[in-house]
Image (cartoon, rainbow, N blue to C red):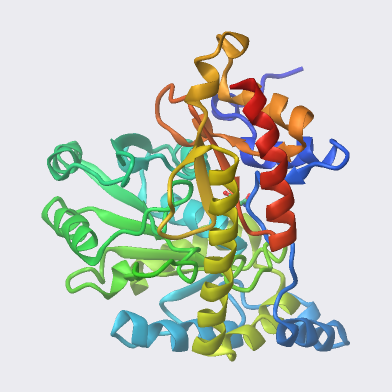
Length: 393
Ligand code: GLN
């Protein structure tokens, strides 16, 4: 048999999504690994889905870079947030999730060998995005407990002929919300060293007070070099729909449109139409989502505290990093990886997590990531189960 490409041998399948499969094959396990809600999208969206299930042109290809209705919704929502008129025809591309928006953006701006700055810990996909687009990641640490970055180190990284920086805000997995000042600093460096800023803002509406979301593209001098990637998965609890988008200056969007066209032709057309009902809900809906997750976070963190687990306090997104060092120091766990720990934890207490090493540049092995996009009942049950870990300490 001929050999597979060298490229495909350089990365593994997603550990996040692998953990879901392991959880699914473990009867009774609560899946807090891959982050997705166990509750329904807004009823307005479900009603629109029913309507769009009837006969009509929406069952055929949409315009490759997105149906007109949804591109208009995106432009209407983000124009005031970015402080400029976004052109729905020229500056918006509808993609199959933010996953495709990120990949298409990287393929649009990077030549093989180009350097791209990635903050570590980072969302697992960016590793594969870099490999598939030929880019070379340069990692800059987000340092716990606040997951802040060292400004000098960031500037040092920019001096390596950097083509782009990826900013996941709010950050998966560490829950950091970049402040306006931090983003201004990042954009300032991008201007100084002539680099693109590719943002992943899928958790824009899952933010915990007093933290606030700043859209990178809204900053003075940012437009022209910021590519905003986003998705409707988390905002409308429709992770299975795979609807995302990129907003970028016209010449960049042109490139993203071409890559997207040949990768996927388009996102599912009837779903693009149905999700427009979500945009119509506007600000009151986004506020209610924020309140919902604020409550879930409180329930979950209280449960983790009761279980005696050390964890961070996320400023945004729906993930918590639990520090498993106290376990790894015990003789029973000697030489264990975080993956070994997660596999054991599913079998022992019936809760699935993602090994933290999937998110860190180096051999960081002492975190596991849990998400709290679950019903409060399920979160209580999960943390009760996690109490069972105590006897191994
Ligand atoms: N962002 C979610 C996570 O990190 C899931 C994303 C995905 O699997 N596409 O778990």
